[in-house]
Structure formats: C-alpha cells, structure tokens
Length: 245
Image 1: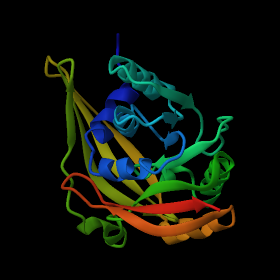
Image 2: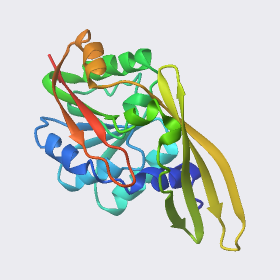
Image 3: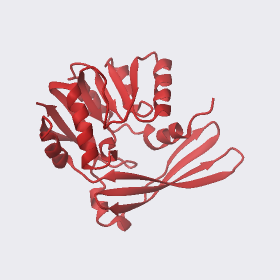
Image 4: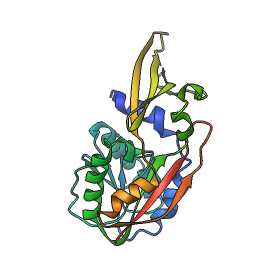
C-alpha cells in the first residue's frame, strides 16, 4: 500500500520532534476528561499521551494523516478517537478536559480572525477551570528583523522503502503579520533518481500576550506562560496557557 506523500513529509519534518513531550505529559495529568490534540498529524503527541493512559481525541484537517494515526494506534493496541475537521470550526458534541495545540499550529490559522474562530470553538468544549495550551514559535524572533543573517538549519531526513526524503530549510521571508519559512523537499529513489521542489509554510506573527488578550474577550484568563527549549534542529516555543473562566 502506497504511503501518501503528506504522511511521509509530515513524519520527515515533524515526527522526530520530542522536546515538548514532557510538557504535554505534565499538563495532561491535570486534565479532568479527554484531551483534544489539535493539529495531531500522524499522532506524535496523541500516541504518546494514549500510551500513558490518557483519553485522547486527535483533530486534524488532513484525512490521510488521521488514517495513518488510526493505523498506528491500532498497531499499538491504543484507543484514540480521530476527528477530521478545521480547527477554526469544530463541534465534537462533548466536553473536554483539556485542549493542546502543539508545534505552532495556532500560527497556521490565518491571523487574528482564524485564532478567534478557533478560540470560540475551543471555549464551547471546555468547562470552567479547564485549560487550553498552545505552543508559539519564539526562536524566530531574532531572525525576523535580519532573516539573511540566520544560520542555515540542518535538513530533516528519513528513508521510506528505500527512498530518501530530505527537507532543507533555505530561508525566511518576512510578510505583513507573519513569516514564511522556505524549504526544498528532495527525494532520492533507490536507482539514484533525484527530484526536488519548493515548499513554504507561513506562521502568523503573534505571542502569548497577544493570544491572551484575544482570548480574554471569549471567556479565558491567562496563566503564566511556559517554555519549550530550542534544540539543534528545532526552534523553541512559548506555550500560552489559558484557563476557561
């Protein structure tokens, strides 16, 4: 069975990241009810929490990623409910104990309007006292004003069925309200055939204080932000903590 390209590239670029897992584990210990993992992808965080006995719901807009998550959960004898939906408009029909938004997913929602739509959906699912925690990229801040001075990052590489997949970050482009990370995705087939194409991801420029102010109008109060340290391969994160009032 052919593995969808979206699954492979998601695993190449995100699958090996684990610097934040201890934070999500600690927060999940305090959840009174299921934990919703927003932007769950192939299950990097969802599977980790489920292995520790938490009830997890995984939400993503990409059905291929969720099918892979389902397969991995089944292979590990884990129960994870998956929901294919836009984070800006979801209705699970049930209350949640916590919502987590790892790996800058909150910065992929199209600016303040997209974040507000997500926060409204989140608020409908959280009882008073329940937490919403979202990671925001912070290590890019020093590069936004001087992007050409940023040190080149090492490529993310993975082999799948004999083919080498490599994702090479090549630049940062500043745009109004955000930053675009430019990269080259390259494949090398077993016979040596190479193929390369460009790819871009846009992150909205925001921080914990801005998100807290936006959330305050929707029934959230902000707690002290947490941090995930940078690694040699990945930027660090500021984790905004919001309590449903």
